[in-house]
Image 1: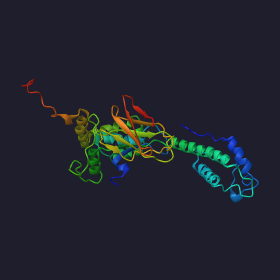
Image 2 (image 1 turned 90 degrees about the vertical axis):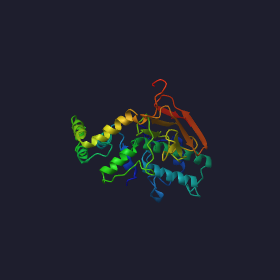
Image 3 (image 1 turned 30 degrees about the vertical axis):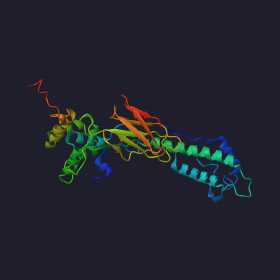
Image 4 (image 1 turned 135 degrees about the vertical axis):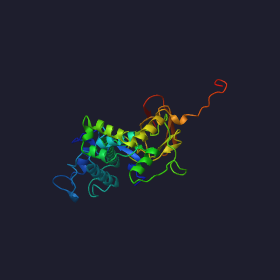
Length: 224
Length: 100
């Protein structure tokens, strides 16, 4: 499990920068707009703390602070500090994601669906009638296919919409999407029963198709 | 409701907790979908709720009860068909030259 250690001086240079320009109005002695920057927590895995730091980033980027009569910091310094804070916020978000338990969904086969509907409200529903349900894809004769798709915790940020295509299913597995950073998509881990099958990942944001024929291994890393 | 994600799929795990083992209700679902291709019945839900499935003899008792239930014919029908790929029976004609 990943956790972000709260460190008092999480970024010494950035801390120095904030101290020299911003603590004057936002520390223990004086709190403009009831906001204190000097004791703002650095536990970025806490969503509320991360939200506050997001606000700080917003103000820094907008150039709202320090007020005009004070000496202005250089844009480059502001940029560097903002970068450090944003990186920390992203790490915190990744740690939050890693802490969440994995939820797996296994779709019922149409026969199981029919039985369930019969057992629950007592309705006989012919799933094999024309126009009802599509035939279930078979894997070595078995209907219910386990496929688990997991994105690594690094996959946060904006979603470039990755979709999975499987030739045996003859369709893409809908709603399988990851969020990953646009600039640098990283490794995706797939685990499923389609061992000898080709799984194709499409990253619409980059307009590239990434193919990988899988061999005999269970986990298929696909580097984008 | 009949097309909701939780209805058409078996859910295992929850975002609030990171656990490796299935809980009692998930175990009940697995048992029930394995043996009768359907959702757990009232007795199985009760067993899961009371934590009986967690005990050593709990699952065995439920298994006996479910095997005695007439609904087990669903399992007897569908499992061999999937396992032995019986849908392929009759797919290949014997060669009349080899087997006249």
